[in-house]
View: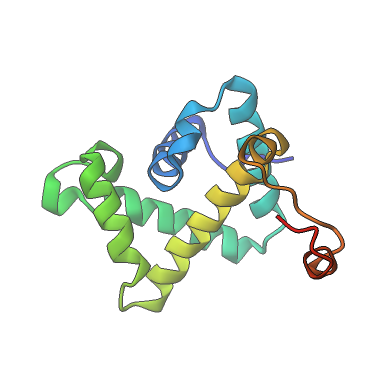
Length: 139
């Protein structure tokens, strides 16, 4: 599988992931490798335009704070990082909202998509869908 980020790109992505899902900060080396593998898998089959758009969104996110804080997004306080992400979730420009929700989706998928994390949280998905819930065997 092709790498989608440079080492510096992964460093930034992981910094943002820790804001979205704080549990990513506690991933060990193996968990981080699985996280990155899931993210790579999730974006590698997308059209080139989608991948480039996502990379541009991350570039925008990283540098968007520079005029206001004189530092990049990953260097402002956690409080402001959270505020900025919340603001972007409901930003008036649809493309920005789409970027933030795509980013969050990838982070959720990379973290919660790991079997050991799901087991630790007690998440037991059913491949039988809603039939399990209807039968009273649900969560």
